[in-house]
Image 1 (tube, chains in turn blue, yellow):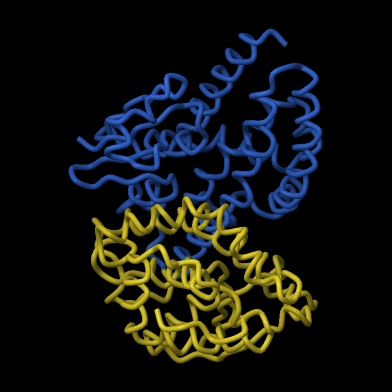
Image 2 (image 1 turned 45 degrees about the vertical axis):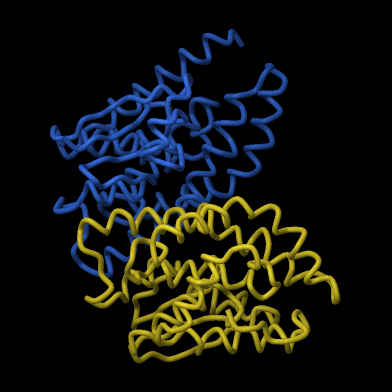
Amino acid sequence: MPTLYANKVSQPCRSLLWFIDYANRKDIDIRIVDVQARDHKRPEFLAKFPSGQIPAYEEGDLLFSESTAILEYLAHNHPLLPTDARKLAKLHEYFARHDTEARKLTTEYVWPWFVAKSRDEMLDRKRVGYDVIKPILDKYDSWFAKYDYVLGPTLSLADFMFAPEIDQVVFADSLLFDRFPNISRYLRRLRQEVTGYSHNIDTAASISRNMADSRGW
Amino acid sequence: MGKLYYNRLSQPCRSVLWFLGFTGIEFEKHEVNISARENETPEFIKLNPLGQLPVWVEDDFVLTESSAILQYLATADLRACPSEAGKIAEYIARHHSLVRQLSSDCFVPALLAPDSEHASVAKAKFEDVADTVNLFEADLSKHRFVVGDKLTVCDFLFACEVDQLHCFGLLENYPKIQEYLRRICEVQGYKDVWTPFVQALVELKVLTQVPPQF
């Protein structure tokens, strides 16, 4: 049985878990990797996946990581993987840019405040991180004034990569999206219209709340 | 006929230029002078709001990102069968998050350094990317190309990152990468892009002479 090694705290893992739910891929065995126990750095895991990262995918002898690669592979023969060469090219263009744009919402804003060791440090990191991500939020808020989804008028695999990066920003500041009404509307649209999204974000929200509660500030 | 907007010093541009030479696809070349800020003109920004190169244009279809362009242009020969597709996509993701640092963290700082400091900056900055280079030295001792034993679009991306290090003699301790680059030299179209690249570096006085053979 093909296996996905994942953990719901990781945004790229959430992208894949959401797609697996959306596409009803009951054939995929989902193995939760305990990242806090550093299971992904153990020799058995590294022997298969030398980069020591999740998500990671195993299907017989085929072993690989990188969420965009796994997503495209999982979507083979699914209607959301374009067969038109130009539409596929636009998806690849988004994937190429994902790390330097949407992923920064997590690496520059959500993570830093999340791992802060005091309330003051958390507030400071949120301030610094916000300056980095504001241009990205502005860009996408303008985009969503014109288009319903990341690549245009229809849902695509790009939305599966994008949404789990941006929706967590609201865990840091629940009022943030009041400033970006079109992004808010986009996320509400996903909740209402796209199978699996509500469950995906709500699970992440509850993990995040538990982690925040355990810190007490 | 498609048009390519490019700059001969840019790795992603070289990758696409080389690939077009390899496949023999006809296209119009438009060189964009970055030091003259031609990528910041209103006309160019209209084409690509990010002001980046390369850009591939076919009528009203505008495509950026070298990896996307390569995959789009890939002929049947180089298109992966499903079992290889995952490994190719994995390399492409890693190219953006990891391999591109060979440019951003080492080669570009060296390029932009004051006169007579290019080589010393390259050597100093190499420490920041050595781990990545070590990874690929290990990989290339297991297979002939960057993904498996056959040439793929990934080689068009990877070779144009790692050959930059050869310009400053930084690959002396990497026999497998050197062997790989010798193999790449034999690939149709590679030298047609490498030669103008190193000649430009000599003209700009970034290098005192053209680098030796791989």
